[in-house]
Image (cartoon, rainbow, N blue to C red; front, side, top):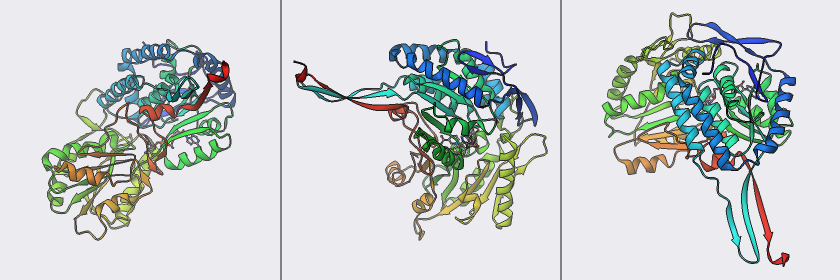
Length: 479
Ligand code: NAD
């Protein structure tokens, strides 16, 4: 069983501490969690050297053998799922039941990623010549993860990187370093030294990785502003980059929906993980004919969701705390804008009396399109409800598209054909009809506009961890 008592970097299949240590904060109690390493340049250089050595052999291991090794690793996570879920809840703040869902989804996604075949494309196969396109590994991948889904987002990068024959160095968020470090520690049971490593650090470690000439690709998930810095830094060494960034997902609700049936689904899609999900519904456009009824039922549903300490096994808790002080203050700042911009709250929430970063949900009643609650990604349980009608001078599609973000979007209607036609006009990497945020390991996921570059998952996600190589073989010239 993986022990969550002490935390180390994993370098070359050995556990390493660092001279200095730091602790992240448990957002439920506002008390420090255990100390973790603060890695510096020397630690990174050592890990990169080990990763480069390991790459030479790992990249030559046949893919079926890589698959069995990865399968054993995923099974190791499954065996340890309870301890991982407990600490995930403690470091992230999400209720234990939701933490377990994250771990189980991670296991399913990971197995799904290695079920995707990476074919070679044959352009010609004649007595004269053979021409094929192969996908070969890039080298050393730096995986940089955020704090909202630390296990799922770290593990899917690790699996995609090593399945395609790369080696990987994971850098978890300084807010949630614990489960990421343990994912690499667990990997020591399955992988040769240097294939899967993890380093925890402070704010200086990410830039050190993006600048490092021994790292060949960065797979980054995080905010748009950091994504821009990552891309600028990677440009210096022409590293490959995949950027999965923030979103401001719209959902358009048509007048013919079954309100009682959709309200719980939409409420969950908006507020799961206390709204701290890249593809949470963040703008809700409700048709004017049902607006008032929908709003009232939506508020009743949201009020029925329990806020509290979900790190104990209380299965009824839905809203855990916001993950960190920075996010907690940002939510309060957006809430302050609701007052300063004279918006009408339909549900007044905000900070609660608690040592942790708990924040009760806020629903804003039909604010103007240019208010901050509409234009910004709150990454907190603050949701604007907006009214639309067919006769709007600016159509609801244009309003939904009027943002520089484009991660996800959905349309909800009983008329599936009409909803599909509307959804296909939305500018986002994933568009859904009568659902939101479903994703699968075989289906590419990524953002349009400022929400990202490249995709994760599916064949396209995997080939993002590869270089394309065109191989021309002249058979006639050999005779
Ligand atoms: P963040 O950008 O602050 O941090 C993400 C990671 O980048 C952390 O590990 C951080 O330490 C590291 N980092 C910070 N500065 C860096 C730099 N200059 N160079 C390299 N690395 C650096 O994001 P966050 O606050 O942890 O996460 C929340 C954001 O992530 C939200 O905007 C959310 O929408 C987005 N997100 C996107 C997806 C997606 O798949 N598109 C998924 C989850 C979260």
